[in-house]
Image 1 (cartoon, rainbow, N blue to C red):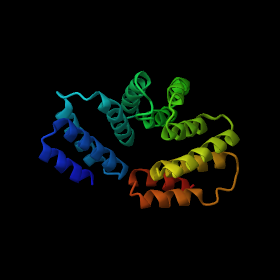
Image 2: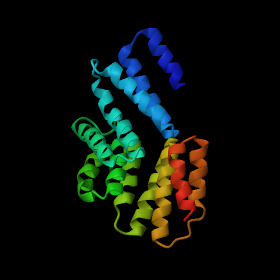
Image 3: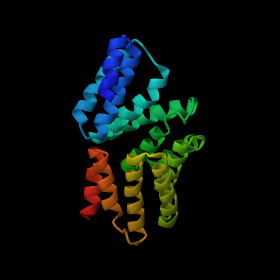
Image 4: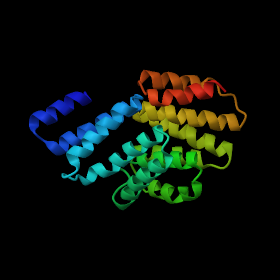
Length: 217
């Protein structure tokens, strides 16, 4: 469907739309674990939109670029890209792309730079859309000091993502929930296996390795 939308944009001669469609393709390819192809699609989007700026593209573009850099192990670049998107969202509306803050928090914690988390959580807390609220509960689970508090927040996030049909986000929150349950010494009850199966069903190969690593522990 994404490639068909690119063909439609080409047929219509709509260059800004074509740039957006290539950005969407980059996102899909990245989630599927096809990192090099995702990088090429993002570059194509940048080429098209370089002299045709679209303000509403800047936030999701930062999210894709940040996740791509993180997937390639370039954490400083990932932080720079995701901070840019989160700051823009704070200036405009976080409800447009709340995921950029969630991804930023994930990379911040991975990089051990957690002194900036509260500022970005406050930006996310301004969101009123169901998706923004689901992302906020996920962030609260990630930032919780006590495993019990993390479990409550992450279970809520999993349920919210599931109700929205956001299956990849649901599975990723399940992985985070499983880690919190492990810290609390709780029975995981196959949560990593269920998350892995959901990711495979969605062809979200980029995140399957996370489930594999948890299952191997």
